[in-house]
Amino acid sequence: MFHDCRGLPLTAASKTAADAFDRAIDSYLGYRSDMMARMQTLLAADPGCGLAHTLMGCLLLMGFRSDLLPAARAALADSRACPGTNREKAHADALAHWIDGDPKAAIAVWDQILADHPHDVLAFRLAHFLNFWCGRPEAMLASVLSIERHWSPALPGYGSILACRCFAFEEAGDYLQAEHAGREAVRRDPGDLWAAHGVAHVLEMTGRRLEGIAWVRGLESGWDGTNNLKHHLWWHRAMYHLELGDSATVLSLYDSGFRDLDSPLTRAAPDLYIDVQNAASMLFRLGRFGVDAGGRWEEIADKAQARIGDCQSAFTLPHWMMALAATGREHAARDMLAAMRDFASGTQPIAGLVRDIALPVTEAVLAHGQGRHADAVALMRPVIGEMYLMGGSHAQQDVLEQVFLDSALKSGSALDARMILQRVAGRHPVPPERRRGYAMGAHLLAG
Ligand SMILES: [Fe+2]
Image (cartoon, rainbow, N blue to C red):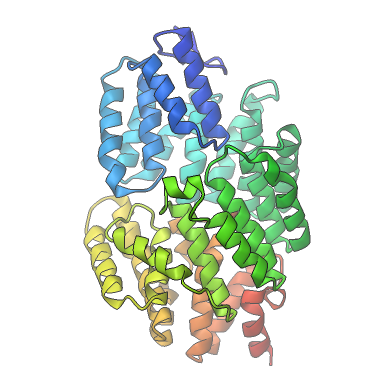
């Protein structure tokens, strides 16, 4: 029996294969763009490594694409055909739940693995990831707190625990604890993208915009070889510039940073969910401030049309609709909603999420785009307190709250505008009067 670099037994054919597994996990933890190349090396070294096949299945699902589900199922079948320890078999069970559209069941399996094996950083990071996309910051935090006493700086991957501690505390609203953990992780490894990201959130939420710009600019030279999370960091930087009223820099970062259509990362995955969320939410915000986006919506709308019916990423759906609405593609918008209703009639938990939350929110985005503001408010109001279940950070959910506020103001519903402003003020340390997306509404109501 071989062991991984954290001492967990690993069913592998050789020391070479076990080392290749460690290198693949390193790439995953480090948000490296060579992840798939390292997986190929691993599977070539040991086609009978069950946990490697499971990891491959999880990586395929991480793109939230329905057209990759068959490949994930094939990876699961390959994994099931391999020998493995109980821990390795449990990982395959988690993958099966995820494939079946039940991410919370997958998380429960990873939590059980962690109870027995707190050094299983793969189970930890996968649970962190899916807890985030299920809108469960409290579970992200509980997960970190349950394992961290078993970790020490000497254990490979410790920085990843710190980075997740940072983001979990940030989303829980404890910015002091979050910043401390994130800065410590970056001090240990300036290329730690997840820790840099967690601190970027702290700086966003606490309104430290100049510090935020300096933070991202000071670290970005160390991000060569990282994956699309780098784009999201540039989106965060653009968010600071946006708040400072510097739309020119926002557009420059859009074109040459987080939506650079010519970059190898974007070419490799031109419609990746996180990139689409970055792009659409920023163009939406710019539109509210009267900035002309030029033809930028069109390429997103093209991709939205091509993905009609794919509901694997609930939070991306209203972003796709923003593009269809902004480009006036009414037929495509109608087709998209019909496909969502079709998907929502299924029995999987993610079908219920689309039915109950994503569908009314996405309909509201279309209504907003078509100027039917009273409709948008009526559609969104019943689910405004549950939108977080689609996943996404407070900073990302913000764009949906802006949709609601904009429609509330334009439909003349002061009651709804006041409600959303109070809701936003309740969890954001910077008062609405000092945030561009909310200031006008706040002043109108105050007047
Ligand atoms: Fe973020």
